[in-house]
Amino acid sequence: MDRLWTPWRYDYIKGAAEAKLSDDDICVLCWIRDARDDDERNFVLHRARFNFVVLNIYPYTNGHLMVVPDEHTADLDAVAKETSDEMMDLAKRAQAALRTAYRPHGFNFGMNLGQSAGAGIAGHIHLHALPRWSGDANFMTAVAETRVLPEDLPTTYRKLKALF
Image 1 (cartoon, rainbow, N blue to C red):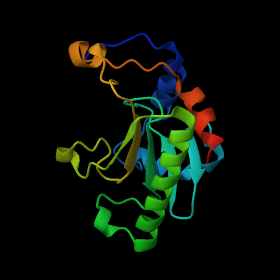
Image 2 (cartoon, rainbow, N blue to C red; image 1 turned 180 degrees about the vertical axis):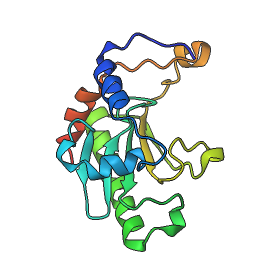
Image 3 (spheres, helix red, strand yellow; image 1 turned 120 degrees about the vertical axis):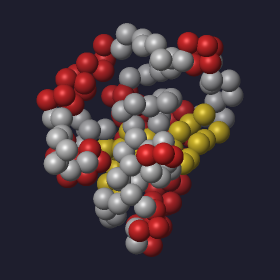
Image 4 (spheres, one colour; image 1 turned 90 degrees about the vertical axis):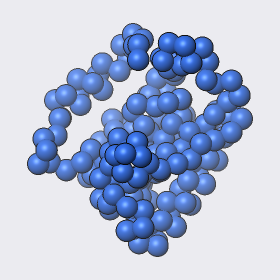
């Protein structure tokens, strides 16, 4: 995949490199879960009783967020009912927030359970929520295998934080 120049991401990349976790450390989602004093820097939009909502820092489209249970588990069927119930309630709130902020034509919600299913963080389940627009798979994605995102993460964060 080709890359586009995105200097606004340098601060994140530099910080991620400095905070790189070793194989013996906790997963990045657990790290974000525990870094409660740094929600803005980590793009945490909302914390509920059993889950939190965070922007995906490698978004497929603007507004791409995730609902993440506090519990570190690779399996949806392993979380308690109150956790999965709250996760669905937060998914509904996410849809409402994304609709208000972006006026999309549709939504994708989904989970990739396991590395072979495409999970980037296979050990900690999370539910993706993405706003979608008719024709948003433009020529850059289809031909050049490159995504174009017109909005930086701090702007997305400010838009959505106010709605949670």
